[in-house]
Image (tube, rainbow, N blue to C red; front, side, top):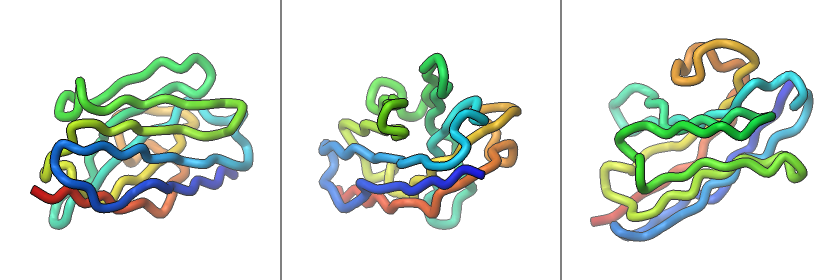
Length: 123
């Protein structure tokens, strides 16, 4: 089992920055990668970023490329999402998730999920 807890969400003005954290506990040795997904009101959950747990290879969606950066600190068992130049369309609940095996961009392939942290970007 893997437990995930997100933090760092909040209200920010357009152009501002936030850093989300995802604290991981449990069987981290079983994880292949971790991802960030977001879900805006009335929309489907959208893949945002992924990082492989052991090697740190990172991938971000085109919609946030150049603005968002995913990283992880294995010593702290924490994954981060640095979000810069935020836009109102980034408003969503952001979830972190852990993948044992499967496609890192497919939400249904992820095995464990946090409860989410809300990000609101005002214009």
